[in-house]
Length: 454
Image (cartoon, rainbow, N blue to C red; front, side, top):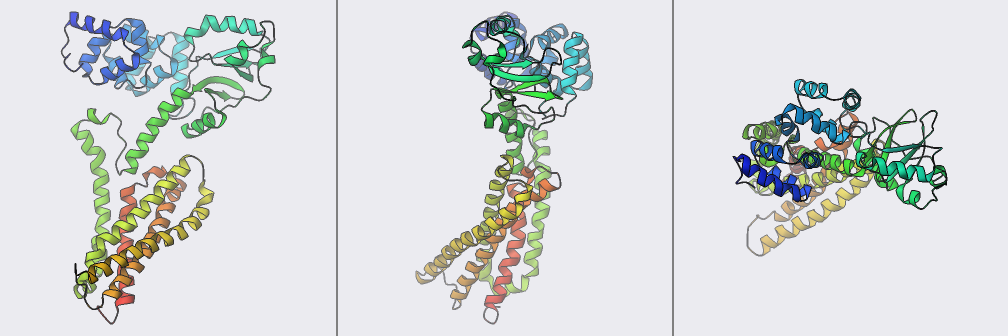
């Protein structure tokens, strides 16, 4: 596909015919590798029904910009034909002027629906819901419901979940699956095939993580968004998977010590990439300056025992690694709601002995390594090498324990003050443990080596 730019009119038509017969996921993948101009040319030549299928795919990169590049009548017609939740996603990414122009060209009912969805906070259940679901009055029969599903099937996000509402109050009373429906007799009341329990629902402001947990816990294909008993829309499992992939990607970027990318890696401009990464690197570099200050404080000790500098990288990396491990485990547990803010003390009690054991393991390895190098003649640590080995071993116990404890507590602290726990990036934890690790290392050295090397 990369040889198509620029594309002549007759060539674009020929390519569009090929795209019309490919699987829509393959078409989207191919378009993502094209320049915006080439992709626009190709999309203009694609049959309209196929165009709707393509734009309904969340994987289509730069979809807002592509809609913006289409002729205004075609863009309005496209938004009308698309699924409501996907249209709202695209409109949310446009600037205010473009959004207003496109909304103004839509039919009043659709415009009102989209404005309602856009009015909810990004990431909430209502912001990613679709209003295209199957709902029927509770006094209908199975046969009538099936006839209705046949008529509206093409205009609904899913027909596998049917929501039953009170014909007078329009409140949600039950929900059932298509499987139970087709096993019933045509004259049976719809309520007779629905499970006799209150449907699992979420509120409009429910966050994405809770949505994902609800769908997973109850093994649902879709979950209704309900406000004061009335169903506003549904969130399907494919919608929540798409949003969770986006959320996970953002967390991975933050945990790596940078701002989350809002575009694919290969399509980020050079200056945008510098902005996303430069600020964090500068902040981490300034934080690492504290490490230099810590070493300056022990300048005299370093002059007396240069051999101690040999183990500084070992000491610092071990503490940072243990801290990063603990941070990763706690962030994941918080995200899955396996633990909450109130469990901080339980995590601390768990990480304290864990850090001591892990530190003791590394300490033994460090002592054995120094002893082997001394006996095998690889390096002469001097007559006081047993004390040096003891210093390294004891320091590793203290530093790994501190790293595990601080790394596990940092996500709790960030969540408590309202920040995303994923902001407790691995580089940030490593920087914190580096500074304190040096203080622990040299403090242990002063105690053990006083009167000999120090």
